[in-house]
Length: 384
Ligand SMILES: NC(=O)c1ccc[n+]([C@@H]2O[C@H](COP(=O)([O-])OP(=O)(O)OC[C@H]3O[C@@H](n4cnc5c(N)ncnc54)[C@H](O)[C@@H]3O)[C@@H](O)[C@H]2O)c1
Image 1 (tube, rainbow, N blue to C red):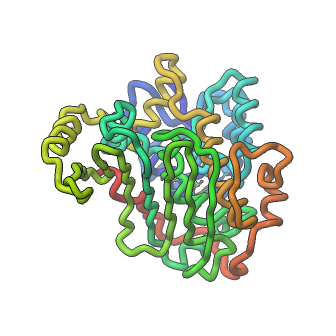
Image 2: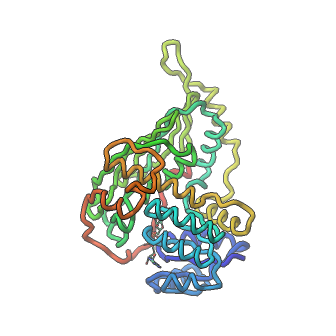
Image 3: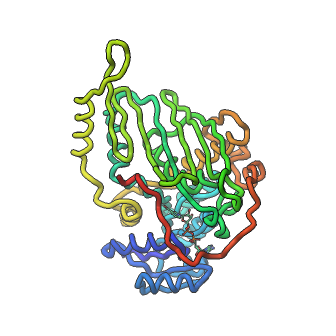
């Protein structure tokens, strides 16, 4: 029985607690901590946990009755909390984004290797049935040679979203919508296609005057044989989030849609209904995932601790996503092509030098410790 500690009792902590509670044969939650100890107490009571409650992370990490910790803290705390957790002999699962810099990612990866404990990074959208099926379709080359894909990481957040103290600053949140929202889709991009050779990008702030960082951005990723276009936004009503992959035989999207063309003698398209039907049949014959989202990812974390599975998203996978984001930020500042990987001597490898180079779109003038309501949504459309 794995004994779980929850670090941070804010919005996402409730999702972790609900997921762990679905697997009582694997784990039980024994401790919850938040610098606002009353929040941790209220969370434990609301979720019906018989858990010790701490107001200091160091106390939770010193608790011998905790084997593994879910780090549900603001982004700037991820690296130090993970390092301290691994140093204290705990397995660690870190919410997205893994960390605020590549240098921090490398330290976390080293700490995990030295401790022999498991470091997992949350990116729960890998565990959505339509995404999983699209991955299998791409891996089996069912679309033919892929020339182009587009990712629309479209979200909507009101300006008050940035009133929370850690949001909307390069120092605390480590970035804007690319860091906090597109992080999910950038993970899916390298999960589906591997790492690109380079990126050109621009970032903007068109609707959030309490944030230093971007709320809109565009990137084009270079691969030897394809281009990927990526849009990230916090100003899109309806949050129509999607991935479309264009192959020479057909295109497929999440939410699931498929099109197949064949050529008329003059090069104009006509529908290839057999090709389309074959893909529809391939899709519906694939099994759905038994668990989705955080449930599935946390179960993998538990089974990796038990030694039955490899951790699916480790520190190296998490670092790839941070590398893509840093490439985007570097290109937005330099105005040109940025090649991967970014080396340790690159100013975009370290947080301090990166932050100095980034534009401050606005001064953050308003800051609240907590919102009165803790309800959040986790995006949409990837599950359809
Ligand atoms: N996977 C997802 O879809 C998803 C969704 C939302 C948030 N997140 C991520 O989860 C993390 C937390 O986000 P949130 O929305 O829950 O934030 P939140 O502000 O609601 O919760 C964070 C909590 O951590 C506490 N805290 C801060 N520093 C602490 C410390 N040093 N020790 C103990 N407690 C501390 C705060 O008091 C707060 O209660 C962020 O990294 C965010 O990006 C992920």
